[in-house]
Length: 300
Image (cartoon, rainbow, N blue to C red; front, side, top):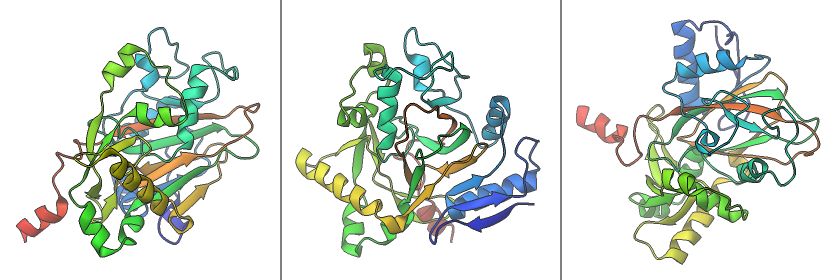
């Protein structure tokens, strides 16, 4: 039976009592989904999932996206295409060279973001396993975007209600000066619009939907929109809204991209760090999703 221990006053919990290496009973899976609705980030210690086990469990939540590296011409993958390689290792399990394009691209994960917001249909959940973790550093920090929204002044919340932000992977990578993308990669990932405020369907709470991938606000002068995004990012990542996860080998961490942001923290690049992420696609673009609050009101 699933048991939960809160890790932060607002969100995030350590989950125990379920062996994810085995088929998960329907009642346990329902409890995990309910816990994600409440806590948004769940930490399962000591799972030591194989890649097929991680894919099988992740697929219970919905269809999985494939890694961006699978679309890069000539790129050899270390892992199955349904697992994003969040490591500093090449296809032969050797440390990446300091100037390897995969390492340069991966440095963008140190920026606050939510996964796949640069896709028309963004990510719902991410499930990240720690196969090899560095001795120090390499934490993953999470920000509770529901609590961040709640803490805004009422007038500010109202002013954000109908705003649309434009997201692109090339925006976040340009921030760190990485622009080594092929024409095919750029054509495959055009900028997409996403709502700045969304209603989380499980908790029925409103949430900011931010990421370093967001470049500007639709219909707003560029400088004004970018300043607004920067101010909201600064607000949402204040320490009271943030949980920092210190990894142990065998950890599985699941988070809800619809109501959190996250970022990786630095570690010694001479040490291997082998992390593998499965990403569950959402049901629709944020522009096309039904507002559960309006649906609830209509039904009442």
